[in-house]
Image (cartoon, rainbow over all chains, first blue to last red; front, side, top):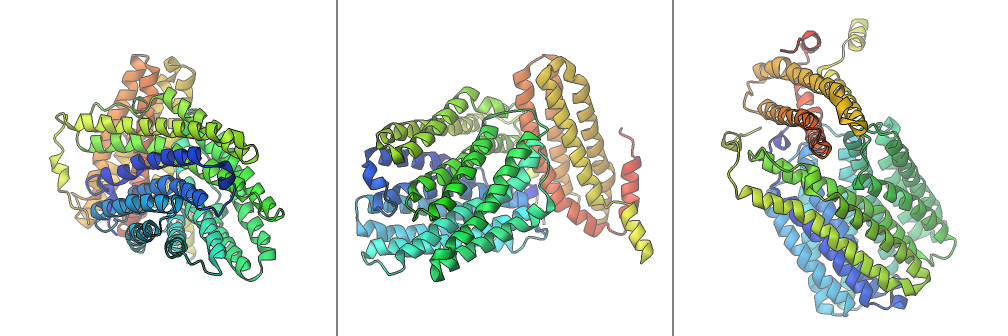
Amino acid sequence: MELTGLNADQAPPISAPLRFFLTAPLFAIFAGFLIFISDASVLTSRFSPESIAIAHAVTIGFLGFVMLGAMTQMLPVLAGVKIYKVKFISSFSYTLLVVGLIFMLFGLYFSKQTFNALAVISLSIGFLTLLIPMLIALTKVDNFSPTVKAITVSIIFAVLAVLMGASLLSSYATGSFGEYHNLVANIHSVWAVFGFAGILIIGVAFQVLPMFYVAPRFKKFCKRRVVILISMGLILWALLNIFAPEFSFIAKIWVGLFFWAFATTVWIKLNNRRRPITDVTVWYWRTSTVFMTIGLFSWVANSFLDDKHIVAVSIIIGAGFILSIMTGMLYKIVPFLVWFHLNAKGYASIPTMNEMINKKSAKLQYVSFLLSLIGFVLSYFKPMFLEYSALLFVLSMTILEYNVINPVLIYIRTIKTKPDFDMSAFENMEIK
Amino acid sequence: MAEIFTRFYKMSTIREYLTNDHRRCDELFASMEDAANTSLGDAKQKTQEFIDASEHHFQMEERVMFEEFEQKTGMTEGPTAMMRHEHSQMRTLMQQLMEALESDNKDKFFGTSETLMILMQQHNMKEEQMLYTMAQQHLSEESDRIVDMMDSMIVE
């Protein structure tokens, strides 16, 4: 067993996760602008290239970036494994993902086939150069905790979603759409949302809720079985979609029930948490569970309405459930990383977590995000709200960017000064 | 067989024993914050209880388990050195908690407790996932004796 995660100097350099975290809100801002300039009638169709571009500005640009950044940080700590050449791999993958995503957004939005072709190549390589070494690192884990299992399953779904996504985007690059395009698109999106993001969130919640909020621990059954049961449901859902679409609602109910149970459990655990603090991260967890519940019910109900309202359902699940939690996580993880790395470098008088993020601006960010979210759902039915909601969303993501940049500026300012302690003795410590 | 069975239930392993002690410290931490949330003035006792429990835990590791681990494996500059280093970081933060109480500064108190909480949890995670597992593997023969020693240790 390698104990790489035990040493701050062998943990990934702070730049590896931070570059993903600081870029995420920028893509969300960009998505907000695209919504603002788009026609509401175009966005109500799930398969319009504009909708797909905006969806991916958020799902890859925000959610994907936050998840990848978090995993580079979490794998050494949670699983005790080191990602091969993490510094190089994460910056290489990051560059390709940024470039690839920009190509994809412009390619889809302005129908440029060459851009789409370049996007297929750079996004696929970008994702896989980070996901595959993570999977390889995970094969070396000795102590497979439920969280590490969930992360592994989540990465497998991510790889599959990326491969399907690459084939889908190739269709836009070549202009020829196969017979199964929409079927693959369905499986791609459901596996990415519930398999990659959803399972990762569940796995991390097992660890994070009891630890950071001193909430009661999850039951053994939940920790041992839920991820496998959800995965089975997702595979069943894909099979039913291929062979017997009229029965696919059964698998939806299956998957939905477990996520709903998870949402309810999180809510109850937050009620019973021992730490009295209510900060913006707690609001985000709660918001997320509410939208998760509404989203799951509407996702299942939508089956009986010929899947007419899938765009509204996607907003509720994608933004309400997943984006909320990811934002909440950023508020904890960014200031901590700054504190942790400064401390490891020997600085003693570092601003505390609460001094790094201004509570008022975090609150403002939360409220504007929540309003924009409600606005987006309303504008699906009443398009007049769309522009205002888009502007509110841009505002909330701009404040978020400000809030996460602030601790990083503190970091940059501090490392220009001399450390309080000389930590060079720890720098070359080899742990094998 | 029966003997192994009773022994198994009588003594907890090093890993179980120290992991349970982490949870006890978490509980005390929560009680401390709970008290401080109502009034900083009344939180002194709870804060001291938390600090004492943590110090007890650190010393059980530093003076008993780490020593045994280092002797057995010969790794003195390895994981245990890093864990000792993190203990000292947490001791500094606990000192700052007391200072915040003395100066009646609620923002400073909760800012520090938040930082301490995350550092402590990240530290516990590494110990529970890796170090304790390793210790249990290397010290399984002496597990009962070590747990006994930790159990009867008096804080210096």
